[in-house]
Image (cartoon, rainbow, N blue to C red):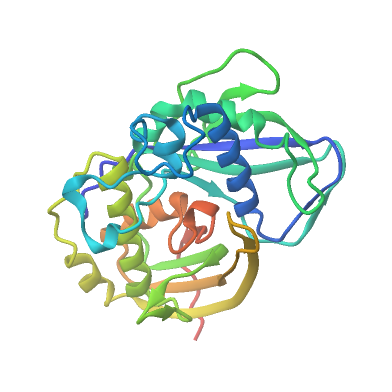
Length: 322
């Protein structure tokens, strides 16, 4: 088992529309952008700088820590060329949504590792996230509540509610070694948002288990070494990919989806593409359980911080599918 010292908090955020809000099928990048701008306005003390690079406060500033994390000097390796962000949105892919005034928008937000210490700033930014408007119509929303949740036990704690001045800064923390095991021989993975994993230099069209496992191991190792306790430094990263070859892909029902995303510069657009649907596997999943469960909450693949690569696991004794 890969050692992972990576605590994280899963938040459930609810906003109430103040006017018509038109959202695309996958609104993760819209929410992430609005949150980032709100956090920047709250936290940045040197707005005259074009980027966080070179700022003497980059390792202290809540915005710099969350949106421009620096790579530790002892981790200058190719797999960590772009440090992963410790703030992750959890938004499923669906249909375009038209929210009328008074309707609710709920999404998940995961705060990873050391970023939990910045919770006061993060909650303050969530108060502001909908005030400048979201979506095609720039419809405004207001914060209804923020709750910290334990997705496996159902335990919940309110951190912030509407305009209340009181704030609870003690979220429920989850840890890799304490997540539910996977003891069955069959596992169904339901991709709820576009998964983009590269294999052989191109986006993988078939989600065989070794491809998924390598992407999970790379992402969780990177997150843990930058934002956690770095227990995986020096660990053997070859054992689990070899074991993953013994897991059989029973069935795949995947489809390709894509959505244009505006970049931070004028006229800059990116085509966010990936796979959604279900995959069924057969094998011994016990060695992979911590990685699979972490991925279930933290996402995997390209654009994971927007909420891409979000999946649910269903371990059970599925009937043979032929």
